[in-house]
Length: 398
Image (cartoon, rainbow, N blue to C red; front, side, top):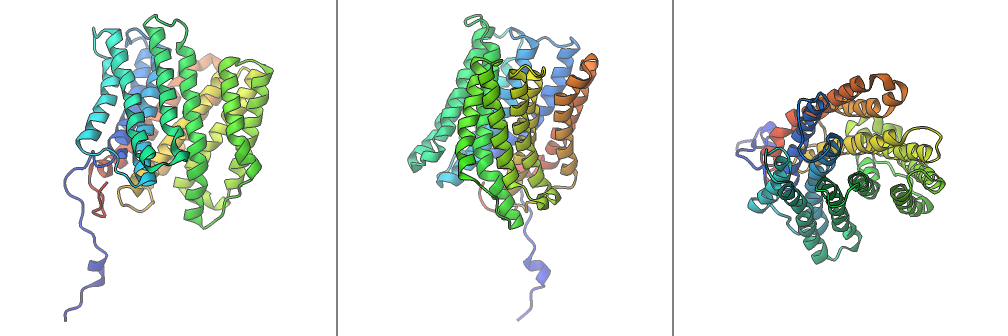
């Protein structure tokens, strides 16, 4: 009997063909990476006065597309993939997933089509989130997973925020765009707090064989303080109540994060990027508390700690990890992704801190932050596009 060389036993056939719609993370993560770069390029053109964005003001359009374009794409990819794991029920793939993706894409393109009626633009853009909420709710309801019910509800809350933005742009609800954008940010922050509490310590413990510390009192206070601070900030941003609740939220998130800490994760980029992303959320609440108390003019910095920091850093880290795991690969990113992780944190640091220190060079600061952001997500697209477009390397579906 001929012996088979041991190296042949470890070889796997390379994936052939294409699988861009095999599972939700594939089209949405790739689109989010590309759109993150494209949006910053367009934003720089808008700042220079070289591009006109129809009915919305430039600032509102920028905020809208970073939230309802980029961020929602990441959320869609993550939740469609996670829901299949949670419930054991297949989420859309193939043609249904392609149709859902095209609905998201239509919302992005409609803003840039000359002469398209604003009412039609709003209708197209508003359609995606309710459809996504329904698609996500069906397997969750069928599996009777009570702890996952909040996610479709939060998608509907994002829909309400989007209605507020479009209502202002159409002149139907004047002055609601800012509140709509803030509501959207706060809903996403709430999603991060819920999901981060589940996956960050779990990923860390599984990789490093450690055991994260959790305190029942802190875990009980986290949702209470988070929702209290965010609701108060929506109702009365500059008030002692908001300052107190935001300070409490910053404290409980800081303690929660400290409980997850181990020096070991600093040698694992896929872990420290997630911990730093959550740290930006804690910092966002701290800056919100200072702003609400009138101690420092940090309202804009708080907002960007949540967005450029918390959302930007965590989305890049989660996309990098989920894409590896669900394409059948080892959880070891390409070395260049460490540079991407550094770049996204640098972009957040520039955007949050430098306007406070050097307000006279605001445009240069914006450009520097945008370049660092584009480097981070550009590297993601270059490294991950092949694995997002190709079938799993282990031959499994998905």
